[in-house]
Image (cartoon, rainbow, N blue to C red; front, side):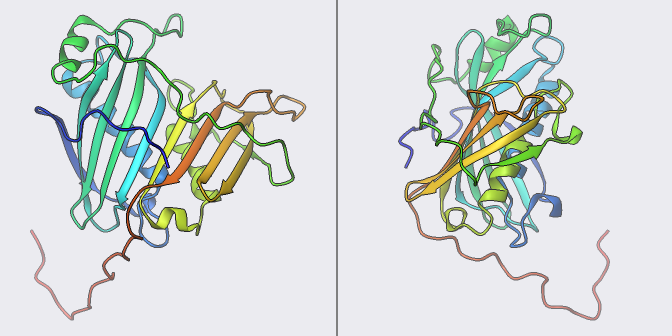
Length: 277
């Protein structure tokens, strides 16, 4: 079980809020909102806030170094999800952004993402603008945020269970970064039907090296009593994996009982309803 704790349990001041419907493309056959869908929600929320606050003109370029997703109760379709986003801690070039997700039909997910402001010219971390910092630091707990890896387990040796994935063009964002959701789609594939996702759990994904557009990766993973771990290795032109992984993922249990099934759907059928206007 991960012992990492968030600094704030709830927004200490006004936060950025959005709501939207859960879509069928976000859920598994049991109507649970998947981890990769949560990753898309976090990305969309960050994008919406940047444009809403006007920081697309001063602080447009960011990348995520780590995402933490604590599923206390899964979101389901059909329902609406409400998201609250706020800054928990900062440094001069990066920050930890929190998002709370709650569903209108139940569901509670807490997340944290380590965002790095980078320069489009150099590709290196750069200072957050004065206006951006003034906004982000309104309610923070920490102003000397430092990076510390959480997924520190040593990857296993190569084995017959390793497999290769050819990444799709649709897996990449406008900056030619592998989309955050694409990583977690591979996790969902490996954990399909696993009881780990049927009870409270924490997923941590850390991005360790760039994965260029058009790449293939080797997926290496292990599952034991403590949880699940996965690493992606970039493959060269000859199909040989890199010496070090490009990403590391862990999924571990959180305290709590197994999830109850979602409410039955579709509802009891009737012959006629009055049209909603």
